[in-house]
Amino acid sequence: MGIGSVERPERVAVIGVGVLGASVGWNLSQQGAEVVFIDAGRPGEGVTNWSFSWVNASNKTARKSYFDLNVTGMAAHRELSGTIGPDSWWHPSGHLRWADEPAAQAKLLATAALLTTWDYQVEVCTGAEVRRRLEPDLTIPGEVPAVFYPDEAWVHGRHLVGRLVDQAVASGAELRTSTAVRDIGTAGDGSIRTVALSDGSRLDVDAVVNAAGPSASHVAGLVARHLPMRREPGVVTRIECAQVPVRRVMHAPHIEIRPDGDASVVLHSREIDALIDTGEDPGQLARLLHESARRVVPELTNSRIAQTRVAHRPIPADGFPSVGAVPSVPGYYEAVSHSGITLGPVIGRLLASEILNGKRDKMLADFRPERFPS
Image 1: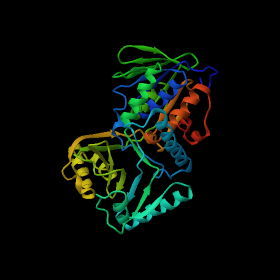
Image 2: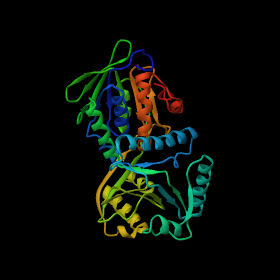
Image 3: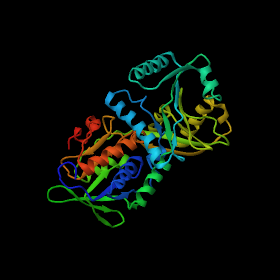
Image 4: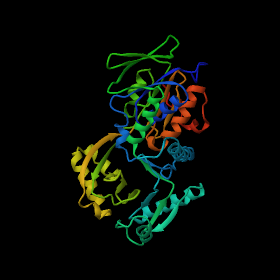
């Protein structure tokens, strides 16, 4: 059963069916494990559906090992699209970023230079070149420096989760939705044995994967495990428009914008997130996001706000993922990360291998759960 056991688990409960849980469960099912997906709601409709869903490593430079993991995550997405088909979930159209203040512009260019030394694909251009070659409907000034990352992408998270879960179920996995985990039972040696659900059922299992996102700390507590998490809410708005006027994910001054299909655009802003705890009404936050977006993309003037959600990001206390076995609880594994969209396919592959074969991949060495002592 991975760490602390010589047995390969036959039945694995995956708690939380966002992009991380779906990725782990899909990989397990492809290797012959019996998988039970458990979600308090519906697959992919939690944080996964309300994230900015940007696949990247350019924003992950704080630690080289984290950058490397995210680069591998980007490659794993490309591989996955070839395996399950890209359909409506995979959009490798690159990422565009620019700033409107000298200090921010200098930081942007310094990051681009660093990434170049790490062999990351970077193109530095001007606003005029951006309008001519990439995004003709932007108001970006012609002389402003901009950075284009051609290998980056965006993902429709709910569609990806749906595809992975459907394939896993076709391979024999079980899906339990609209039911929460109430208890996790252990044997005399502390190893995982049962999962009790809010619908009154109890499952016999050999292992559990805690991929419960914002509820991961609560699930960890069911096995007397302390998983400290940050409180970091974010507001995301979807706006509807007759024709989507942007072609790729972008970070403009004060606003983040990306397509979300043929008739929708997603908006987010860290500056607007800072207003959440002031008690500002989510509807007003959505209007502020919409106003900022219209200044960058005037074609969005006639669009309308369709949906807004304040979601809590699943971020361990130090900001980095918590992935792998917890040796003190044989059969218990964590898959908790803010960068779930980028990291889902690679974490799914590495953690499934660890669960089934006991292999602790060195790429996860800096992100092991045991750095948070129980």
